[in-house]
Amino acid sequence: MNTAQAGGGSRSSRFKWLVPTLYIVFLMIPIYWLINMSLKTNTEIVTGFSLWPNNLTFDNYKVIFGDPTWYNGYINSIIYVVMNTVIAVAVALPAAYAFSRYRFLGDKHMFFWLLTNRMAPPAVFALPFFQLYSAFGLIDTHIAVALAHCLFNVPLAVWILEGFMSGVPREIDETAYIDGYSFPKFFGKIFMPLIASGIGVAAFFCFMFSWVELLIARTLTVTEAKPIAAIMTRTISATGVDWGVQAAAGALTIIPGALVIYFVRNYIAKGFALGRV
Image (cartoon, one colour):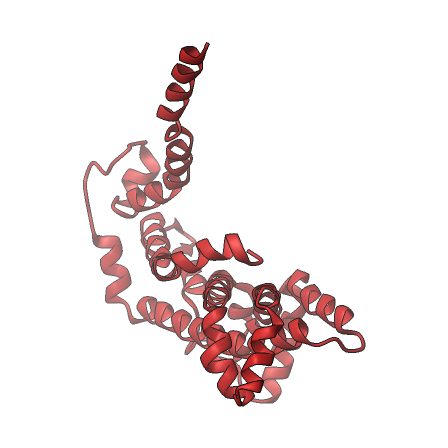
């Protein structure tokens, strides 16, 4: 019996790699197909099915890198996404600390109200934001989109950071005050390193949500700050869709997110184990 159990256990251990491998392959199929399309001509895309390009071409990428409108779209998106990430995390840190360490009238209701802003669809806020920023002359600026996205990302960052901060014992705060630390010194030198993984996770989610959001970014921009997601609609014309250029643009939009995931991958892993992720 023991021999049979040992044999069954060894067989199961040999196939542990199968399920995650199949899952990863399944997830990579759309990305591979996107890159595959970006290296084909429109004629080859619409006339046949092939697992790899029959006539390899980089003309679709040349269109993007040779047209200032295209590559400026990527630059605009990165600018306002980075601005939003910095603002959202900077605002969320003291707010999350207050929710984590203090109890005040209506704290739970206010915390829930913050989360409801994340639940609301962006279309609800598009027109109010447009009228507000038009009055202040902020239309078609990077800061307009960055501030608008804070409506959704600040609540998310507060929710994530509050979970990490609640896991830090209050005795650490009290001990630091007894040792003569001022609050800014304590928060910067002691507390923030303890929740570094939470900051990394919050920054990652703020970056990703701001990067993929289209409706508000398109509503608040015209030409100077128009994001790449809005520029990609240029491939649709009376003659049809330029599938090759569209695929090349989509493949390039994956790169910033992949780089962010690479640099915060350890923080994300800790976040799954320690915080609200």
